[in-house]
Image (cartoon, rainbow, N blue to C red; front, side):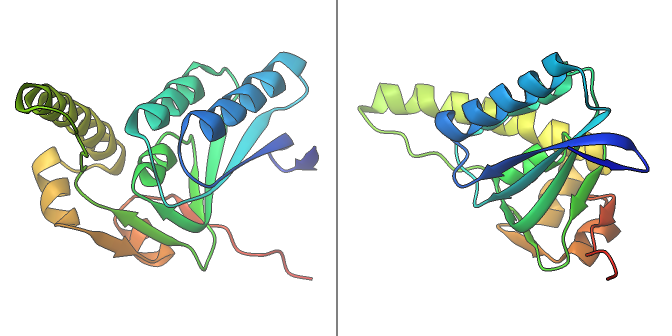
Length: 175
């Protein structure tokens, strides 16, 4: 645990695919820190190409349940569902060399046509929910956000800050 201007800060690392295993570990650590009661803030450091929407929503829901503020720091790569998770932070940061990417949700349904229709409805509902949450956090309407992202949108930390996807750029301390 480190101590800085914000008090005692615990760090959790989420690296790799957003899936049940990585999200489960992160949620466990977040609740463990809160249960110990020794931290004033948590920093979730994240580097991911994205992954499961449902797993990402589980992490977002867990972050919102915590009484301790959670700051999220994107480092290296923050793409797809990772960018949605980034929006759940009380404060959102990116390190200087991070690439942040958003895109419309995709689905990879399998099975017969009727199953495909059910999967498509579910995917549309997940996308609607995700877009509403992100649009609210970045201060755009859903329509504006869809137009902004286009088919795929990569952003530098400076551009992400300009468009309110992050609150600041986490630069290395001066030595």
